[in-house]
Image (cartoon, rainbow, N blue to C red; front, side, top):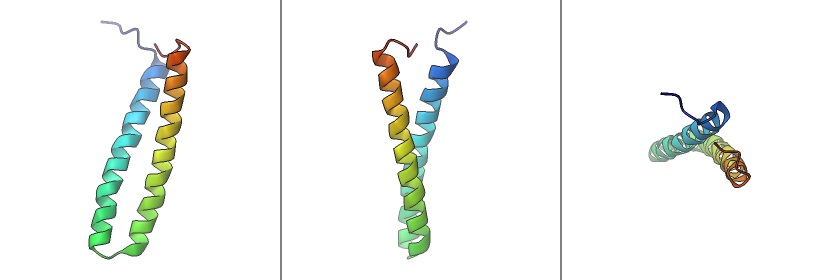
Length: 73
């Protein structure tokens, strides 16, 4: 069965999902670093997590823009 969902839309939705999952995993890793009193690891993971949050927001905003323009199909 062929989908009407374009490759571009699929790619954007998949990447957004992967970024959000990564943020969730980083939260767990940050908690572990904090428990182990490893401040350096905690800080590096926080920076990476923040980058992924920023990227997820960029993807979300693009998806909303495309959807409002009727281009997210």
